Image (cartoon, rainbow, N blue to C red):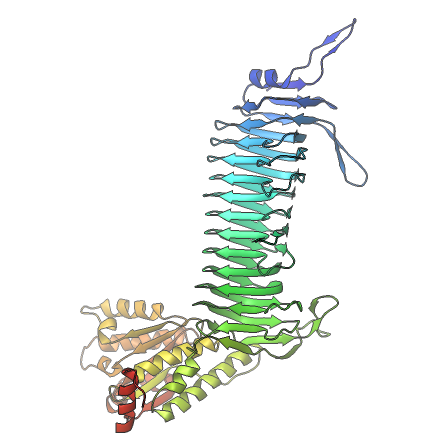
Length: 577
């Protein structure tokens, strides 16, 4: 492998020391060779320089005592890395001095690795082009790289990555990172600062970010550019910091998947997206729109006194979390459209320090809970509480359901706080004649348990004997297991359960045995409701000693009176009584 020295020509009457010019060195060099830029050399290249070989181009720098760097080799021009070339740049300052100009273009499956490189465009008028452009299956690796600010404020100062990948480590990027059309990014221990557009824009792309800081985004009279904008994309971030003032969505998602573990974010807006938060701190507010699904362990919403509701949700969205803690009070802290389903056992107002803008823990560094936060609703009331209240008749059942759910919610909260709770199970018997509302109440019970945070899913799986029992040996166990697994996290409603109590070698008994075992193995993950005629269900309980002990909750559905039947008929006909 050879090394080619690029620099000024040095001749005297005593000797001649010919240095290479850069274009000739690149043309002459072979794969694996190194091109060294002479210390102090500053090269200006008007025409683009194309590299289609595997080369290393290295310069020189010195480091001051304060850690700042002095780069003594500067390349002013446009480098194009192409045709599957693998190029490394080290210890260089790469610059342009004109509008509509890239410093580096990487294309056609080529790879560019930059170590200790500075990129800058010194033009002060005109229009920006991406300072680094990667397209067509290219790969960028940026380690200890600085992209300097642009003096042109048009929102187009970018690292643009299309159908390519970029990895950023220990770098400072004063430009937008634009990931487009199947782009992929890994970003670790880096800072991205850009206040003339988005700091990070993702479209149909994927990104994995760790221990990095994003500052920027833009607010104007006409529109707002979030610091991080995610469209039809996937972002997985851990210990990320995102700062943008005076907006409701420093991170904004549309039809995307977002996973945030730890970290500190100014504000978040989720639209028609799936989100998973684990130990996330939000400074201002969280907005949830359309058909968004949010699952979380703990979310801390500090909430500045800025007139913005701390947690706002609308549309057919769902919120499921172990706890959400609020600091600075707003009125209200939580505002939800009634179409939103929320399952959060702890909505806490915690002691908050306005000076530090963090929660003020006790002497054991534990969160100090002041009270539970209330929810303000708007829109048509479709809550399970309202549905239960509006049911005609069956008052005894309605009262017992309310008590049953309240006890379950209390036990859930006590368990979450590490306190002892009564050893209760939620499996139930619904007894009564056909048409007495058993299935309707089962659906409401499932929604109630979900809204109160007792179960993790609002799904209700309705089955009968034919869905559980097979026609051949071993078939029943497979069918029953499939049904049981599909109902995990929610409610399984078995109608006419007594039909499983066949005689002789009936396969219904096999289904019962599978159900009993599953109830024991997943006692906290599923609620099973067995429904049927009162007398027949008593015979059903006798077929296995384990049934009665595992189904302690019994709801007796009385027949409707004549007046109640008339009311039901009129209500179904949308007539007034």
